[in-house]
Amino acid sequence: MSSLKADVYVSPPIPWKKPNGTVGGPWSPITSTLIHSPSSAILVDTPITISQTTDLITWIKATIPTKKLTKIYITHGHGDHFFGLPLLLKEFPEAEAIATKGTVEHMKQQITPQLLSKTWEIQFPDQIAKPFILATPLPENGEIDLDGHTLHAIDVGQADTHSSTILWVPSLKLAVCGDVVYGTVHQMLGECDTRAKRDAWIASIRKVGALGPEMVVPGHKRASEMDGSYHLAATRVYIETFEEMLGRAKDARELAGWMLERYPERFNEGALIVGCVNAFRALKREREGKL
Ligand SMILES: [Zn+2]
Image 1 (cartoon, helix red, strand yellow):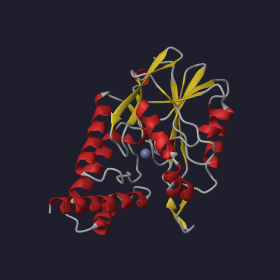
Image 2 (spheres, protein in one colour):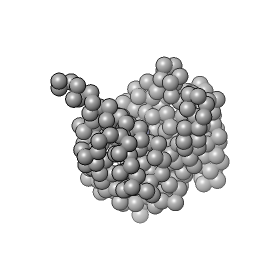
Image 3 (tube, helix red, strand yellow):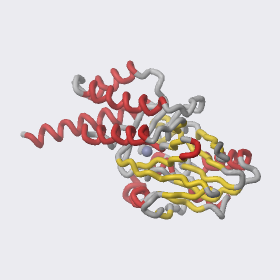
Image 4 (tube, rainbow, N blue to C red):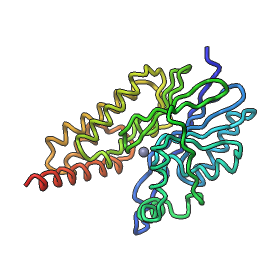
């Protein structure tokens, strides 16, 4: 039996703002996973804001009061999975933030002034800890040591963004999946605006499935959800359903309506709408390109 244990914390949804200052909707709940040996621990992913991260720190201290947090692994470069680093590293100065090379490059792009001023700083004004901290790139083999247990950072490629990774814990058959896998929350297809990218996301899910995980932690899920391996199939079927409906829908509104009818239990329809709009924009670009 493995001496490792794992806990999952879910940062509750918070409102984000539009450029005119009004509330745009809720941000999806975000998971942070703590994997711990009898003496030390690794945290996977952080939430966005100062207040969310403060709550996460309180939870970590209560969950592993006698253990040392030695590492924080970031699954992919989206800001909603690493903006909590400055506060966490201040609280746990012995911890090291780590990620694959591809994720570190993506993190750098997320914090450029051009991107920040159009996205995160508008959506969460004065709520994000500064200065930003990037992760240190892992060696090419992606191996991470936790008290003699080897964990594996695996770059599976495309998911809700490029260069997406999962953390594989063989002795627990646990896959901490970041946004390669979603729970009962609408999947962000905004960047997967072409068939090729959506197919690539499905291929990434299959790579996780091939590891034979018994526990699968989605990057975004409702707090009450179990971390079942069934999330793999559900995430894949959602993309396949979107693809099939996209082929029949006349516009983004119709597609979103059908998806909402099919998935009334999924949280955060705002994420779905971005995906629908971008998919139709890409179709238009393709048609114009062919003319
Ligand atoms: Zn993401």
